[in-house]
Image (cartoon, rainbow, N blue to C red; front, top):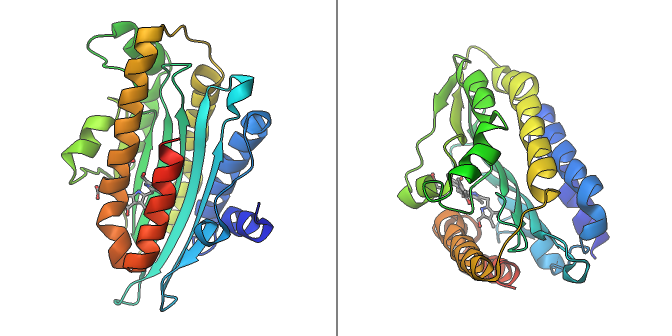
Length: 276
Ligand SMILES: C=CC1=C(C)/C(=C/C2=NC(=C3\c4[nH]c(Cc5[nH]c(C=O)c(C)c5CC)c(C)c4C(=O)[C@@H]3C(=O)OC)/[C@@H](CCC(=O)O)[C@@H]2C)NC1=O
């Protein structure tokens, strides 16, 4: 694999130290715990690291598939960062780590996204998106969302004065997340420089690591019985979500940020990874 691309990805450049340290720690935690089950990143170098024509937007993408033959429950892990200089002089930074399980288990996936569009405002998405209907499967709600106490972490975060709920403009996105999903916007005053970084370091960092730990123990490394018929339903549901989220997350922003040809190349590469 492209060493330059791999190291570049793991540096999470352009973001503050607390933001970078969190993402670096999360990626290394996942790779250390699941590494033996993961194939190296096989994306082409110009997908692992890409930019727009004017060089005002830089990005990196890193995916590692689970090695099927060893009956890994991991479909793939996806990490990414995007940095775009904005005409206003500010910058948009999006860092994300998501982990998708395959139909050998029906356990939830993992997702964290930090979207920073100004020095005083950050959107945090942190969730274990369910892979089954919670009304039809009450034990699923109990096992993955009640017993794990995920709601207490959501409540801790929402106590911070600068933390407000983030309501996605996409109803589809809202339909994907769990009842305990952390979808918040951290809004600070310009008179409090460094406050966003402080909230990341003191609150977002520990909570994100706890949620990832729960996902690794209870979901990625947990054992669930999935029957043949159920496996087919999971396969269909997982496939639909992967394709739709590419459209919702990237469909409108990427062509605008990277231009049509780079956007097509990256979206094409994502569709290949998402539909193997
Ligand atoms: C449960 C599943 C999901 C939830 C809950 C969810 C939430 C959101 N993500 C958004 C976005 C987003 N994410 C990424 C990372 C990324 N996503 C994919 C998907 O295949 C890939 C392959 C990559 C790496 C390249 C980028 C680049 C990007 C945006 O530009 C977009 C954004 O910041 O707009 C402000 C927001 C869109 C809706 C909204 O404006 O409210 C919203 C907050 N996104 C989920 O998938």
